[in-house]
Image (cartoon, rainbow, N blue to C red; front, side, top):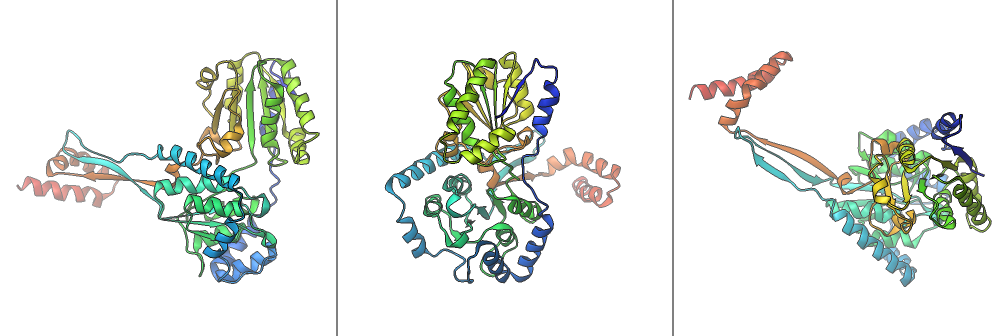
Length: 434
């Protein structure tokens, strides 16, 4: 059973602080292991990746079989049902349409001093997407990572997906095909991240790595950051629902369980201004947990990390929400738009009782790769911008340099950077000579 909190209780602040600080990740000390794996891949390339794949995924590969071939992909994709194909294509179309709108404009202008200034946006040349493997892999994550990359104009997109015991999810390969992925490799774990970052004989290095993974993958992404870009270090899933009593308790119970079923370390929280309604939702959760396929996982998540919080009013709910900074925030209230205006920190907003978080995971259009563990306080979900770089532009005319150059020279001298100042002064002297 989840815990019940009430902001009127004397011990609320202590209990709420404990809720925020609960350690929700089973994160063994993997960094040393990951460091060794990365060093091995850097040293031995394909041989290390193949050896580690056999050890961890019980799959024997050769340099020639690391990558899925076109005929193999076609045969596996043919197994996908028309209904599933249609759903993936609908999702891809909506994700693409949403992310096209995120493309920023270049700009160039001349200021009053005559200097031409601006910026331009260009894509990274190559990106790598990590996809968890086996039957539990998520084709929706392929679309959410690959489609924005292609919208941004990334020329080469490579996917690594582990296939433990040779198990392949055809939906993942179809999603990759729909999204325009160029290469798919059947390798995973820290060794896949190392291969994408540093390259091997068979896998060319990329410029940015995105996608979810376990503790080993997360640790590897931390270690290769700087050599390549990464999207984020994501933790267990989480959802916060703010609701008034004018809702169906079963709807909200299912919304809470939609994240709890991901992982025993996931977190589902309900904030309401009606304590009796909160308890009704909790009873509905208990009823659903009797029949859910993943009830063992969802039940453990709800028991260990779930919470129902009663507040005095929705203003207080918004303030608590900002302290939680949830990955997903559902606002099931009479005026969700007004309440949303009071929220500053959330990975994604879902407004109204008819907008379950699950539509965001698949087909609404916005990205489902979102900041977790309160990092929505300072970061955003994956977007087209993550695969773009902004380059600034400056062009001085003689008149512009004459107008602003002396200030640059002064500042250079104040920082004791002589050559900086002289590089400006030499040009100014030339101008003064006529």
